[in-house]
Image (tube, rainbow, N blue to C red; front, side, top):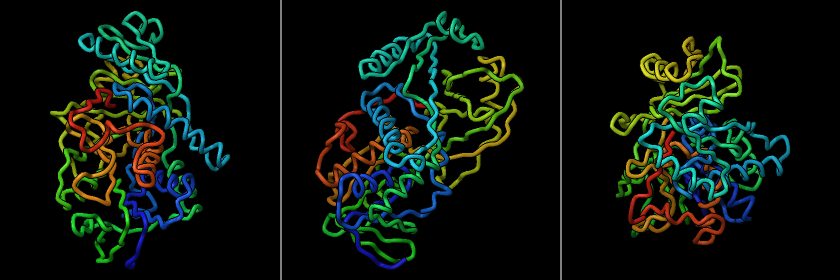
Length: 388
């Protein structure tokens, strides 16, 4: 790569970074030079494509519910704008989020908030669960069930659609690993790359996922965000469950239909969720035998003959304080915006998050959704309990 110049430099060509590029160039008509850089511009190792790529409206914070609803609307808009080329393969599917009796009140409050925000979520007690889902051992459980506006999609297609629109509107996408942010007189002025080249920029937008905390630390600021590995398992069973929603168990194990089989994973509690190397993509295959299979078979007897047919791994950029994104300007560094700490819901919120970054870049504030409570300098934790 050679030295260059950008009016706006976006570090990270995942779904959030490409969404920001799309809104800057195609939707908002910014005529300056927008450059997107990524160590893997083709996306082969992108955390976006390693995601389970599911969308839900069942969160405990209003902003996350709104982001999901806007995310779905913007996904539908891609198809309306681009026709078949904008189809990201969204498949309607419900979420069934289960909890033990001690968490009943918290779940009921979350359902009330979701309904107030327009989500069609139902609260089900043990009897209601058993009546609707005879294949589920529901003793001691209650749950929330989405009735629409939830499902899963193809993350590869999402990246491809965003990349095509951004490039066609004038954005430039380059390959290169950023070593550090360039800083002059307290202002971020671009980035230095591992090959020694530089790109100078009037504004830098940092959305490099699990690599964002490291780049911020090199610029003199630590954030409480760490990469944590998530293994996802492809499964098959001779006893399939008809019309099964995505099921999230109280243990943190989840499973959903995928093609002719299923995929499943586990979100462990904080004490059992150590930081990991963001470049370690090897799935923890022992986790299926030791953790997932027993817990799934306990609640879904049809899964007693479950078999693992494949696996992959990716990473969450986990916000250790409140499991919510950090979005906005950095008070101690002019010329820099960043988005990080999505804690597992970044891909489903990527489109409205990219739009929000573009609004901050061009207008200095939010024009669509008010996401000011996600500011990196928020005075208190904004805890999201719905982590899957």
